[in-house]
Structure formats: structure tokens, C-alpha cells
Image (cartoon, rainbow, N blue to C red):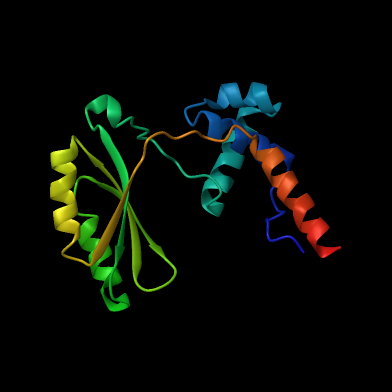
Length: 164
């Protein structure tokens, strides 16, 4: 039995595929691409939002263009009982874009930006207050271009093959 939710039909997948490529696509453009009325598109987008399958991301920002030359992930190992308060504190830093809690011994993964290496060093000094720190500077990022519908179909095929 597939863990991928099947309540979404091919229209939903097509809408998500277009919006995943360009979240600013209008309902008029979606209507033409998916071959549904604007009203049907708007209704489906509301349902996709309510289900959590589509997240509005209104602030797509290129931080490098704004002068942040450092994009990095920082791992912090800390006692499990300090994870929640450390996460709240870290999210108050303007350079922290996200904090993820991962499995294992109180482990946080922080996505952060910095103007330069000196700025990044000051951030690391701050992060070390919470626990053992390791850093990974992002050199480049390449996004997958596999359309959502193809991705879901391939995963479903793999799951079916594993069951056999």
C-alpha cells in the first residue's frame, strides 16, 4: 500500500506542478495550462492549501543578490531537553532562515545566511553557546526538474515493485 496520498487527482498534480515551477502563476494561466475553469482552479487551490499540499511562499528571495555571500547549514548537537528552547532562540536571529530538528541525540540543522566570513564567524560563535557545532557552506544548488506527476508516479512504481 502506497504512503503517497491518492486523494489528489491528475488536475491537482498538474496545478501543483505548475505552481511548484512558478508560484506566481495566475488562475488565468493555470486555467489554460490545466484546462479547467478559473473558478475550479481557485477552488482546488484552496483545497490544496487546506490539505497542506500547497504552501504559499510569497517571499521568494535571492539572498545573494541582497549581499549575503554566505549560505550555509549549521548542525548543532545539544542535549535533547534543550532542543525546543534553542530552536525558539535561534529563530529570533535574523540570519537564521530555518531550524530543523533531526533524529538522534538532540540535533538541530540551521539554514543561515551571512554577509561575509567575518559575519558567519560571529554567528558560529553564537551557535556554539548551544552545543557542538559543525558547518557546511553551500557552494551551489541545483533543483530537480522532474515534474511532480512523474516524481509521484515513479515513487508509486518503486513501492509496487518492492511489494512484489
